[in-house]
Image 1 (cartoon, rainbow, N blue to C red):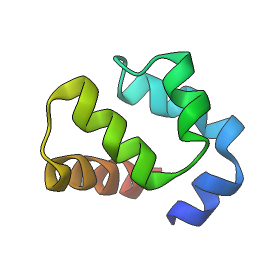
Image 2 (cartoon, helix red, strand yellow):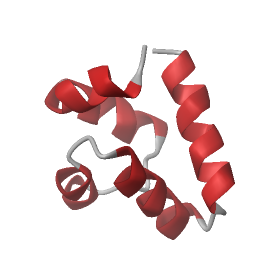
Image 3 (cartoon, rainbow, N blue to C red):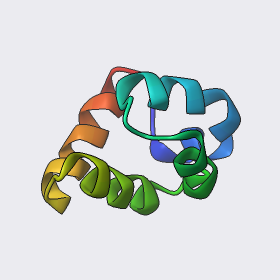
Image 4 (cartoon, rainbow, N blue to C red):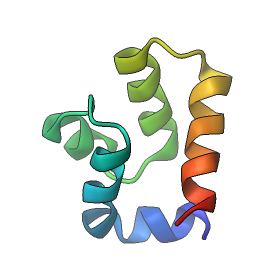
Length: 65
C-alpha cells in the first residue's frame, strides 16, 4: 500500500493509526487528516522520536497494511 491510499481513505485508517500509536489523540488525528508529514510531526511530539525514526515507523506500519 502507498501513502496516497491512506490519505484518500483517512477516515477508514484513523482507527488503525490510533491503534498503532495510542498516544495520538482524536484531535491529533483530525489535524493530521492523512498528511504524512503531519503524522510524522505528531509522532515526534508524542513519542519524542527523531524525524527519521518517525518516518521509519510510518514506513514499517505502511508495509503491514
